[in-house]
Amino acid sequence: MAQTKQELAAINRRHYEELRAAGQELTPKGLPDPTALDGAPIPPDAVMHQEQVPPGWYLTLCLRRGEALRIIDDSGRSSVSLLAWRDEDTSERINCADTIKVQWSAAVSKGRVILSDMGRVMLSLIEDTSGAHDLLIGGSTPASTLAAFGKTRRNTQENFLAAASKIGLDVRDIPPCITLFAPVSLDPAGRFSWKETKKRPGDFVDLRAEMNLIVVASNCAHPLDPARPDALGWPVTLVKYRAPPAAEDDLCRTASPEAARAFAFTDRLYA
Amino acid sequence: MTDQDAVYAFDIPAERPWSRVLKKGQTLRIIDSEGQQAVDALLYCALDPAERYSSQDTLRVQGSAYVGLGTRLISNKGRVMATITADSCGRHDTSAGCCSCESNAVRFGETTKYQHACRENFILELSKHGLTKRDIVSNLNFFMNVPIDPSGNFTVVDGISAPGNYVDVTADMDVLFVISNCPQVNNPCNGFIPTPIRLEIRPMADP
Image 1 (spheres, each protein chain N blue to C red):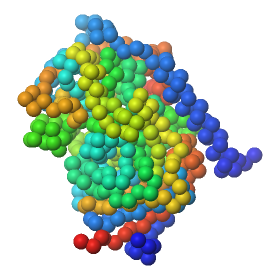
Image 2 (cartoon, rainbow over the protein chains, first blue to last red; image 1 turned 45 degrees about the horizontal axis):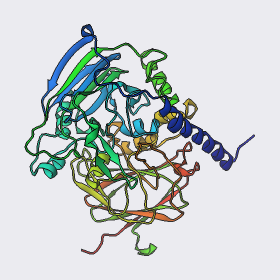
Image 3 (cartoon, rainbow over the protein chains, first blue to last red; image 1 turned 180 degrees about the vertical axis):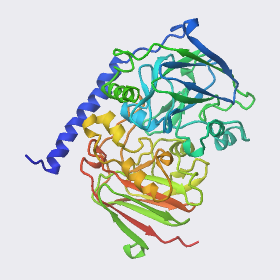
Image 4 (cartoon, one colour; image 1 turned 135 degrees about the vertical axis):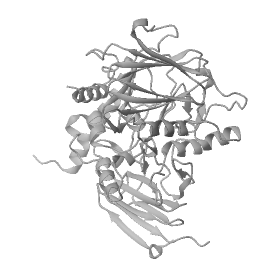
């Protein structure tokens, strides 16, 4: 029986309301607590590479599917902005908007995933002590450092440009980024503010690659971080290690129906 | 301003794309003809399309999450590309991106994968200007209501725009303005029924 536009609209509205209730009421109840600051030690024989990134600088790393990256805010005063591209086809890249809307939340934390623009999982947050990350405002830029410090400083936008250029990409390949350890909150009117109390020395996030990736991490103060004109910043530590693969009952895979579908679509790339 | 002042007018049918260069000083009026219709938009510097609209730079400079009267649309090089100079709706989004076949399949189930989507529109329209999927960044969503609550909950809810509501975008440089009249039928951004929108380009204001 043919449905009228209005009947179809009513069916789609009911479907949307069911998905919203699941995404905003059921899913968050199933998410794990944050990782403890002294939790989740990496087995020494799993470590593949460890490096400190000086303040203002960036590091580009290749992660194969199943490898993970621990990013540690040693001082509790740093933020780390991230981009990722799929190694085999760099037109597939991190997509903050899809990451937010698919998971019904602008807050990412342990158990959540970071999606590409192709409906696939790039990175899973398998450990996270912080849960205070920004996907809306992005990293520092020449203009934001000029406004904060009265002169242009090393910044994330130029770091990304340099990192992209070194792998044959350019400014067209730089999408909106995620910034870890950046406690940006919103008031009901939508105004942003910085919640310094949510930052602790030793906070870390473990990101497991669900596809072969090129990742760039930029260690620059977030634009909302109160300016400290006398401080150049602090180093952060990156540890690349072999992680257990995302099993059928994996925390991130099973966190929501949306995540399960994104994992299934990702698995097809490698089936 | 009366209709006679318009130097260009065009009705974009439901679900279709559009693009045109706006000269510096020109104003594009986007009219939500029938109400509750999301209009996805991207801007590129006409002289150098590597300079393009940046949602994150725009929100950082503004200090708040929603687009409305007075919002300056900032490029990835930190320059003002255009400004919202009139707005009878009051609420527009720039955090939710555009719909795609791929994200629809993840959000709403695989049965929605073969439905038309904004990204298909953007890819086809950008191809006329030598641009590709690489060049699609997080876009503006005029007339789209996406409240973000303090806990982070992020929800596309019913649009608040009434039939005839409009938003004026005045170009601060020559910009390639690209629109997808959103075909989404799986969330309330179009009231679940996509409809046409009207565009009018106004002459430059007197200096």
